[in-house]
Every structure is written in structure tokens, then in C-alpha cells.
Image 1 (cartoon, rainbow, N blue to C red):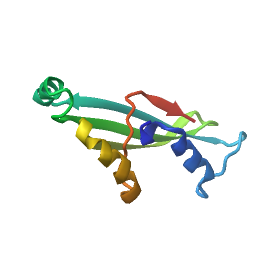
Image 2 (image 1 turned 90 degrees about the horizontal axis):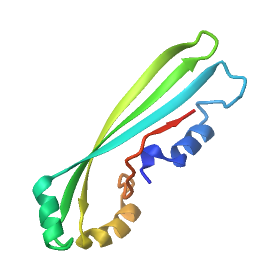
Image 3 (image 1 turned 90 degrees about the vertical axis):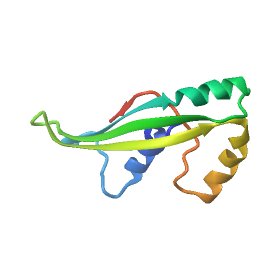
Image 4 (image 1 turned 135 degrees about the horizontal axis):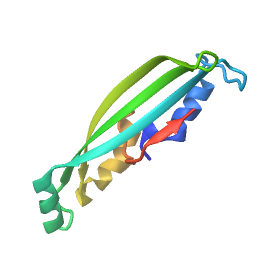
Amino acid sequence: MNLYNSSVVEYELAKSKLFGLSRTSKMDLTYTTTTGYNHAGISVVLFLITLGIFPSFEESHSTVTFTIYDKENKKTIRDYTYPIRGRRIISWLTIPFYIVLPIVSKSFDGGSNDTISNAC
């Protein structure tokens, strides 16, 4: 699952000392994520012809938005939007990297999900 669109984000926000969770709070913090992919055309064709040995290249573009909303005044106080770009290589030969890289690199995201998420 995409890390920007997961229960891990909810959990980290909930346990953060920056926020206090309360049903009677006057403010809401909402985060929304969208993710899409662009495939590099010729690499997909070569991937299919070689049955996955030649890698297929894919670029992802995600947007993560945090919105702080005042429930009493029914107004948005602030929106924070962060664009995130990534690249992915798909091939049978990359499977060992998806096993090893998460162990040695904190910034490696081996998962993907192209859905839209919205959570309060």
C-alpha cells in the first residue's frame, strides 16, 4: 500500500504530541491523497516482449493535502499541499532489490496504490 494513503499516516498523526484528539474539538485536521502514474511507452513494450526481463519504467505523481478546518466558524484555516514525485522500475530482475532496499533505506517505498484517500 502507498505510504501516503495508509493507516500508518493516521496512526502517526494520532500518536503525535502536536495534536490532541477529541470529539469535542473546535477544529478538524483532514488529509487527502491522490496518486497517479505515467508509463514510459517503449519500456512497457519491451517489458512485454521480453516477458518482464527488460524493465518497465513508471513515474508517479502524488499530492498530499492537510487541511485545518474551524468547525465553529465553518471556515478552512489553512491548507498545506505537498507534491511528491517518484519513479519505479518493474522487472523480474528487481525483485531482490524490493526485498533488500527497505532494510537498508528508510526512504524506499516498495508499495503502490493509485487510489484516492480522505481521512479526518
